[in-house]
Amino acid sequence: MDRKIIFLDIDGTLTEPGKNEPPQSALQAIGEAREKGHLVFLCSGRNYGMLSPLLAYPFDGVIASSGGYILCGDQVIYDSPVSETVQAQAEQVLRRNGVFYTIECRDGSYTDPGFKAFLREHTAEGANSELLRWREQLEQSLNILPLEEYKGQPVYKIVVMSPSMEQLKEPEAVLAKDFSICIQEPDRYGFVNGELVSREFDKGRGVERVCRYLGIPIQDTIAFGDSMNDLEMIETAGLGICMENGSRKLKELADEICPSVTEDGIYRAFVRLGLIGGPGRIGLSGEGSVRINA
Image 1 (tube, rainbow, N blue to C red):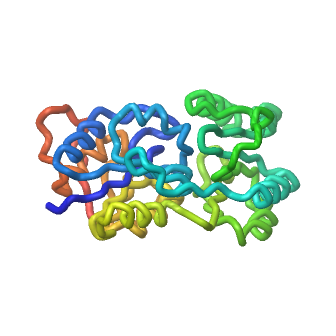
Image 2: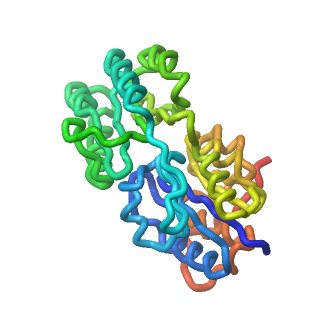
């Protein structure tokens, strides 16, 4: 088959959310695909610094910060942080509305300590104590630092955590000109989670920039994702695939659905698509198969 460029989201796609270790089956699939001449890129909302544990494995490039920072091999082909003025306006309107946030620079992320303080004050309410434990583990595993340690580095993306949609109304209205606001489907913790991504870029345009740089047609790209912040990537790629564990909305929009990250979904999809040979050298976790979305 013609050489393909494969774009892999990380959290919920290549790894379980918040973790840095892909299943052995996915690593084997990536290695075999590259041996056959295909190119494999990480395409993540994570900033470049958060990718460092995964860059211990061989990839052909990285789309980081939802498309704001792109590497092909060792060459930076795109680098577009938001302006200081826009950043300041975003932080101001979020604070005014009681919306907690994390700012993501190229090599570091800095989170509002008020989020964990709020959770501690309301630990008796619903799943807040579970969310607090999860949040603390996430910050430790991804090296997310307190906001007071931020030293003014350029910012590429802002992640928001809001107690309600009502508190996001003014931020959405004020920031709509400069940011695309991606709201994730409500999670089990009851908080509204979302991302403010500069309108200068997104994962889909990241895919396009890589293809232009390498001279490879868009139709020869395959993208794997699991959440609505992968939408532009899924829509742009020649073939867009959502994980079975992914967002209901994204599964409706994707071209295909493959088994979940915990069921060797990447490996099974690579086999199904003819990117690599069939199983034989590893033990897979079940009998799941790729299915075409109806």
